[in-house]
Length: 265
Image (cartoon, rainbow, N blue to C red; front, side, top):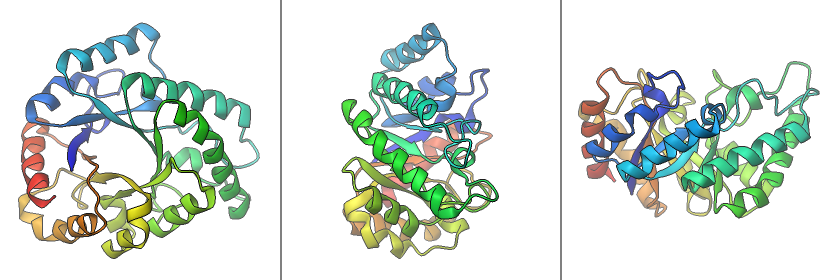
């Protein structure tokens, strides 16, 4: 497995991308970094090029992008605007492709939450339809879109891994796949065995954090993590694991997490 980190979780800069931490992530031993698309879409072209150059100068790739959609862009409900969504999506996937990302995470809980009074089935169909439209655009850039099940506290649709698998099946496009996030899995009290239902076919990306406080994993909790990594190995998962976690001591927490993750994986 390859190990990286979601830099937006520790961002201290005005653009909220976390790009200021790229050199430290490389020095700590990350295989790649994961950067937030919604925040990068707010960058002027000169700022985006500077971020890309920082990656190139440091020598660390951006394998994945999270935060696909801003919360202000409604993906479901009567206010959902297909043309606006598709225009944003095309531009965002282009930027991800320019960074060399091979995976874009479809979490975006606020954007995809179904508004009150709107039927779940209609909202679900809107999400499935969007993913079908995204597939050929993402394919141009060699990108897979990974559906991220989110805890109910953040989103009211696609909350479990089983629901993520079902959505990927319904969309039925080869580059529309699924992400498993250990934090959300624990919050929804799902069994790690659910990874083995369809993980071999659909699993594209992994997010990982200690479930208490959503902080970097700690060796003291190693026993909690072992079944999760065991399930990943059982389905032959050998792709990327991103630490999506908060930290007050980023570099040291990241170094410790990388050592632990590589032992477990």
